[in-house]
Image 1 (cartoon, rainbow, N blue to C red):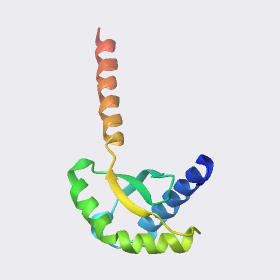
Image 2: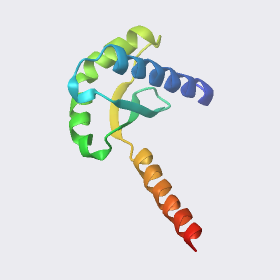
Image 3: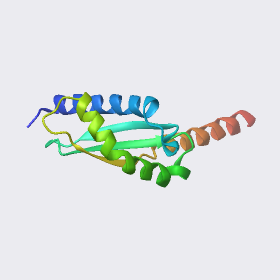
Image 4: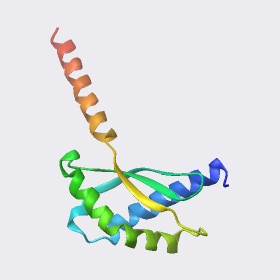
Length: 119
């Protein structure tokens, strides 16, 4: 089994390559303005969980996840050619609400700051 450092390096490399592919090579209109927030790979290198988000937020999450599921075979094939592993993990895509939650918290803090200034 690979070490935790190696697993993290593999996850980082998958995130980097997948991000570049989404920007430069994927022409599916469902996958416009999508970004990868995180990638985690299990210890057996069987699955890579890819966490994604979009500029528009969760409104398009199901459409984006369908597009990624449709393109997962192509993405896995291309990633396997770029990241040298004996067997390449299967890609599983998940919606990441973290950017939206952070934006919501930031707006709440901003309204608190504004109310403190008025007092």
